[in-house]
Amino acid sequence: MADEIKVIATNRSARHDYFIDQTYEAGMVLQGTEVKALRMGRASIGDGYIHIDRGEAWIENIHIPEYVQGTWTNHTPRRKRKLLLHHAQIDELMIKTREKGFTIVPLKLYFVKGRVKIEIGIGRGKKLYDKRQTLRQKQDDREAQRAMSLRKV
Image (cartoon, rainbow, N blue to C red; front, side):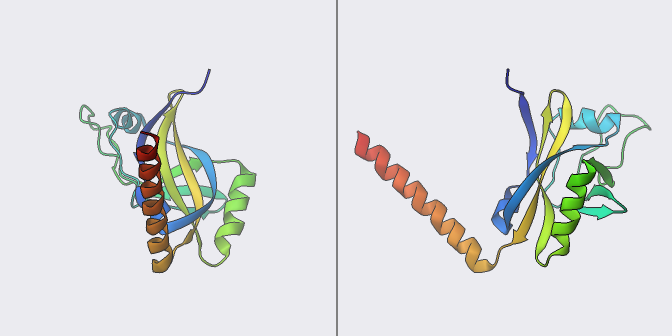
């Protein structure tokens, strides 16, 4: 039986702005009201970034809105959250990000078997001409698919 994945939020601009070399799946340390707000399907990871501090991975600036039925125990929407990764993975991320031009970006936030996971990727920034080339390639692929579908009829 395949794991059921329920996507909460995606960072569509990440693949537009970066060449993603490698991806990792990480867990997140969350409070109860954060999980309840995520179950409602509301979150934004577009502005988020990840950094390594003293051997731990942290994600900042992702927005998980306050839970509507929450009380005084509600969370802060843009607080710093710890990512759960193996030490070997954190070491790989540290080594890669020390190289010039590499950064760690959040790609997708989702549920797997009731647990919140985040897909992160090591990205190399694209130049403006790279972005144009990617858009041109997508457009050419779309036109080719359209021509193929018309040809079959």
